[in-house]
Image 1 (cartoon, rainbow, N blue to C red):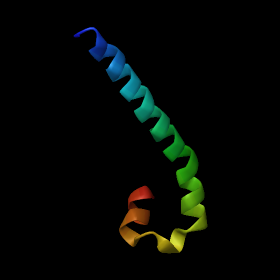
Image 2 (spheres, one colour):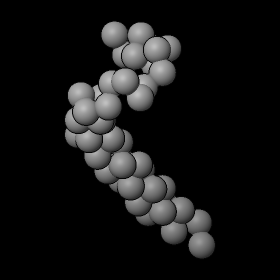
Image 3 (cartoon, rainbow, N blue to C red):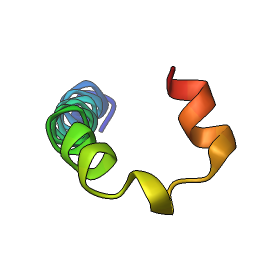
Length: 47
């Protein structure tokens, strides 16, 4: 049963990286499209 854990962690890490990559791809378009909807603190933290 212990041998299954590394494969599970690799899968979870791959999933997390995929989600992070999608965030990196889509986030700039959200920022460009909806700057007025973002809180001022959020915009200043990006800059």
